[in-house]
Amino acid sequence: MNSMLYIVYGIGNDSVGLVGEITAPISQVSGNIVDMRQDVLHGLFTIYMVVDLKRASVSVEKFLSLLGKITQETGVSLSMEKYTPIPRSAEKKNMLVTLVGQDKPGIIAAITEKLGKYNINIETSEVVARESIFLMDLLTDVSHSVLPMENLKAVVKEIMQAVNINTMFQSEDVFNKKKKIVMFDITGSFIDEDILAEIMEQTGISKDILCRDTGDQSDISYVHKTAGYLDGLPLQVVDAIVDAIEISQGTLELLQTLKIMGYKIGLVSSGFTFFTDPLRRRLDIDYAFGYRVPVDDDSKTVMGDIPAGLLHEIDRGEIIASIMDLEGVSDEDITIISDKDCDCRFTPGIRLNFDMKVMLDFMNQHVLSKDALTGLLRSFGVIKI
Picture (cartoon, helix red, strand yellow):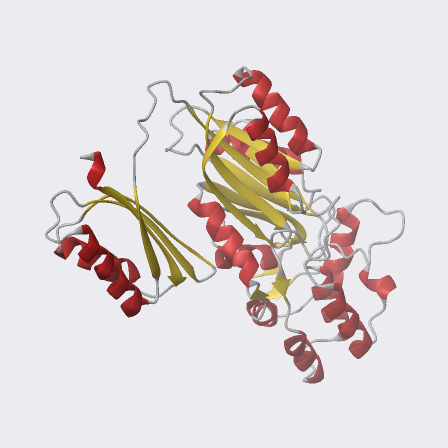
């Protein structure tokens, strides 16, 4: 039977229905596809199939001609080679390795070279790097490792910590990925510095008014002052400005990949909840936390005079601990992505494009005062320019 197994592989531009256009003709000549792996990467379609021709209604030569015809019709360049399967070892032991952190050159080389050094075979890998965040899943075979499992994990963690990458391991039931959490801890503003600078130039709002007072390490005083600027601002105006924010394609791709990989996603921000709540819904993430300022339910306006003691500093540790308890995960299964030590230009992981024109139009129409715009700019997170 092995003499009739062939590996068929191909590459081309992706299109809807491509898998069916390739597999249907093979089925029509009684070619039996016993294994298949197909993927699309940035519009590039790849496919690998193990095909059994033992009961095929055509010869191998005619089957090759069939593949040529499929290539012409689909644009996917297909090739075929004789295949001799390698029996799966009864001692095979898989381990899933997950890496998450700030993206930088050399991460893939560092982990793969280290695994190879200790005789670890990488069976499958998936990588996505978007908006300065790196995410990688490696399914490995550790049955021939020259190191005990605990030593291997320690070595991998050490080399990844050197490049600020969090490492997670799963040795049991690796095809049923355990629950993991990524928390984006954004202490600063989501507004791009260039947009902010242009708004300041157009409106005359000064840097000193926007930024936190020198030496003030508390968000609370900043939040109280920000709310004061917003006093009486209609929520309808706030909603229009927040709704006009565009989410970068890289952010959407990153979050989608995280969810496919089984992650729960949370956001902790120094911004106001009238910004973080709709952002959570638009990003389709699980949790979002910010500062909740009071609203006048009758007039639907922001209340700027916040009573002392109503707001408290966001306790990030308490938030993370409560989510871990709620989701039933341990410390090793949560990754914190923070902008505190990030050398990237934009907010790591979640990049937003604010519509300056909408803000300036509201100001030109006298719907938005200079003070109210100041408060809004401050409400998207503590500005640190």
